[in-house]
Length: 109
Image (cartoon, rainbow, N blue to C red; front, side, top):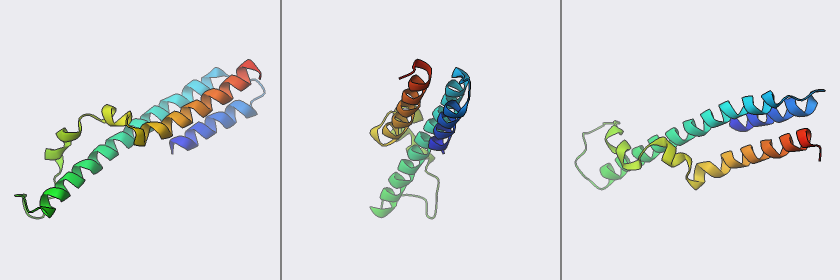
């Protein structure tokens, strides 16, 4: 989804007769929002894997409970996960491609 916003911003920059920096800046907001959302979903997934490991090893867990909130603190905040390699590489590639296209358009390569 974030790649779609980045691509749309690049297309808007490239197709406009008078390109505006506003398109490039406006593309950053949803890209960063999706970056944080992906990090939060990864954090939740890790908590559920931790819950699964507790059940798998036979540790005391309430039967049929899907409450993984007790394990959320094991993984810190979503910002810490956002800079992990599994999330950051994807979004940095989008930001770099947006910056390259914007610099080509505005600086005239």
